[in-house]
Length: 564
Image 1 (cartoon, helix red, strand yellow):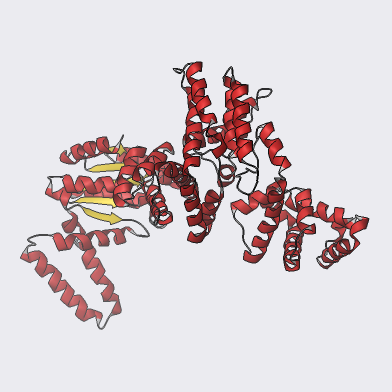
Image 2 (cartoon, one colour):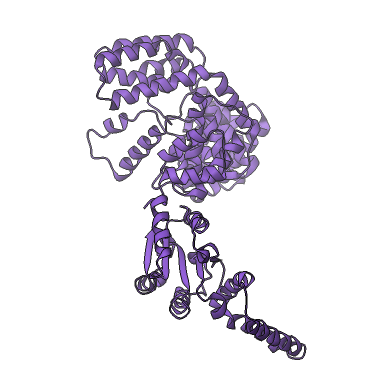
């Protein structure tokens, strides 16, 4: 049940002494401790207000649990009788004196404190948290045995805060826990925090001027872990500390930060990984068309769901912002010098982002809004033709595919949009060209004419040099190398102007070749394509000098057999 309903039910149970042991269960991070704090504060029952809290994190014996409870209880015991005070003082004095001669007697002082447990804990309300984080030496049977004894003999009431999904993972304790759940716990309340409730709590703890945009993305991601949401808000505040973003730019940036951060902190249920998210295409109908002639595999179905999920967030493609974000999440090192220029570019591209959002809104109308007539959709499409020149090639392709497929005059509208786009985009330097996306044939033809391949081939060299210099790589680097072809490696080898860069490139790639097995999963067929590129150069009679150097490098690395 939701937080409000759970709170109401917990208040009701605490008023009824017929429930000495109450369990508040739910998934980790969904606000159970926060809920208890509110209940304790709001209650009119003094015993509930003064409830004694203990976390079992790291505790290895039940005596340690009792000691912590007594230490928290004795300072608030009001009006202790002179008999109790005198009893403790006499024993303390005697044991202190005796301990000077017999070290064993010093330990009895702890026993003295533990003997006071029934007096100190009698008729108290005790809250036990973090049961799943207890030391492995402390068994659940001991904890629940203590609860059973004190609830029956000393009228102590207990509220157990349980991350039951963690407890159930330990098979040796699962059956025992089920037994005590049936015999010791009088009433269990399961908290099912809604995404809106989780965000409300997290946002109070971590205010942000972009709260509404974060909330929308967080709810669409179905995030219920308050700790994860809090981390996401802090990341956004850190990334955008010095920025004042308009609504279109917020729609471009914030959903990506929420999604990629949720992936990193494992806050999504069956969500995409970094690699898929970074390479998301912009179409959601072609994935279905792809499988018209055969039954999609489990992986295909999963990727279709991931694509639809990202489309709901308004994420149809990624650029250097997401790449920099992933690098930050994986390394923990924030390079503001990389992030801020991208944000500033987005600010200068306000019209572009607004136009892009309009296209995506139009596509959603075509695919889902059955109330709109074709005439209404045609009028909307014609209005968008005038802003298509502002858009990136994938978004224009997206728009053209849709109008051609669903509108009777779609071909004409598509031609007008492409012609206007081509007229205003005569250089690849300012274009956002995706690695792997089916562009409209007319747009692809235009890009090919402008030698789009050049930029992609240079990126292979950049990635390998980065790995050589830093002895590490990110998901972005892995993705680039997985896509690299033999031609890409040949181009990098032949056209590296700086000889030091050529040396570093060859040393790094031959190091990968020497340890191919351990790198194949990370970089796919990159090593094979590199070796084939070297073979092509070595076997080219017009490149004897370069071929000779490559052969020497392979011989020094004990890889000469690879060139045969």
